[in-house]
Image (tube, rainbow over all chains, first blue to last red; front, side):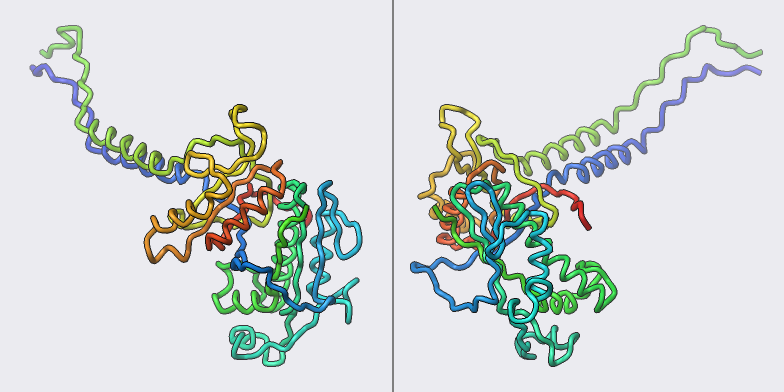
Length: 200
Length: 155
């Protein structure tokens, strides 16, 4: 049977548009580029004179870093590795800071802390006046400073995580806890890190 | 009967080029995205420290980045300098520049302005403290110490 000369069938290209789109989407996702990460802080408002605050000595944990990058926590030389534990003990008023040496635990008012009272009851006590005071020197290296800051933030995160685990049975995470639960835990352990200006 | 390969050669099928515009467009889009996100060329060397408790800065349009580090070009000296938008920034000019930057933002976003400080790990705290003071004067109170994510070893 006689056949006509057949042309080779051309490649069906209707799907190449899809391909191009896939590529485009792939690159879009991949190039979300380096998202900036960091330790976020809220600086105090600028005032002409230094604002003086009366804080009881027992409510303060002094953390000093000098020009040689040595660390001192409350009158004692300390290692960076131990700082997290010390800060946790201080905020919890346990260990070295038990009883009168640690921060005061004060009754939280229902008006100011509605979420806290909602989950922890009306007679919940929180260390709301405690301050971790971080003092650095002009010669302190930034790397050391961030290490110290990181340890302090880690201390709070661990405390909050432990609390979330024992109270709600979930880790301290925005995706796990509801907004109110997050707020209650934040209120229970408020992050009070004071960054004093570096001294000469 | 049939002609089996009479000519001996079969023509090569032509490549369909109708999708070429799509492809080109996608590459175009790709580059458009990149150039939008392009960061200023760093004139200072910045190697940010590592930290485990970092938080992601979500809304990029709210974030202003300031770099601090030693200048790459030795003719600017070896002291740590501040860089903002392709230019070195004197410490006295931080307040006007930041105010200007804030005013260039959308009005609703202005109170949410956040300053990300990318500071080299070998910088001395003196410079950082001065910068922080100026930022406070400029009402830029939301700051972030930029750091690289690191997994915590203990716990």
